[in-house]
Length: 304
Image (cartoon, rainbow, N blue to C red; front, side):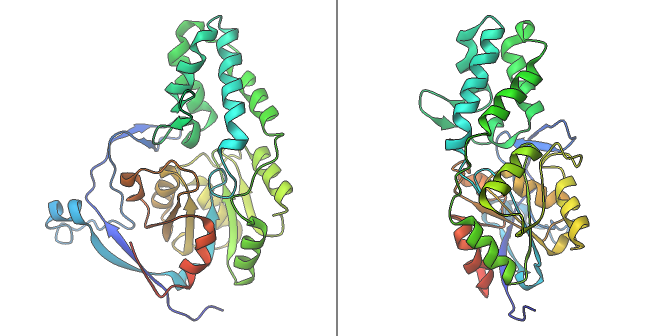
């Protein structure tokens, strides 16, 4: 049983948001700038001086000793993103564009979903990084227009399934790290906007079956992030109240999931290489990698 008192300093910022809707009825990505707060106060007195809060934030203390569950994102958090998926995305765009009779549109399709092949860079909140398969399909259809093949979804499913045969590359010794957290008493889970079979492949390849009490993808019936379904499913499976769960991920959808599900806090990691400075504000705290998580949980006070 943990007895040390841990506190985390958070920034509460003004509620300036601009979202586009997702298929799950929740905001999916940041268009210009988003300010999200953990347990954002609703009383007007607390929010007095909102201009100052929007610029400088206001500190709030969170007791990390109350955290008993940790829910991880997959790609960019537990395993490296680029080595596993870049070839699959490029192959998928090429195959779909070729089937549409417009192979020259492959690069435009990739750009529409946030990836620039010429420079090897991603836009902030690229759909390929934060979205689900339906999000990618919708974006590519806008490029292909009436030339989009009718079997777009099964084609993509096959290409991505073939891509998932590549061995996932862990960002660190994930097996050892999760094992150490579990031995400290934390109950662990993983949730991804990717498919459940691909999540299972990672679990099997890295030997995490004994370390994760729960893992699933967006096709498991709980909806995708940033909806609360997967987080609530983790809570239902483990019996941990949402406010005692820490969300750890590399994308704004992970921060938003923590908010929509009412989780205790959201920790961002930079291993996904997609967070902008503004997007980091949506997390309660940002660390370089999950390697830094044990030290964070050991800290008495952390300033955001």
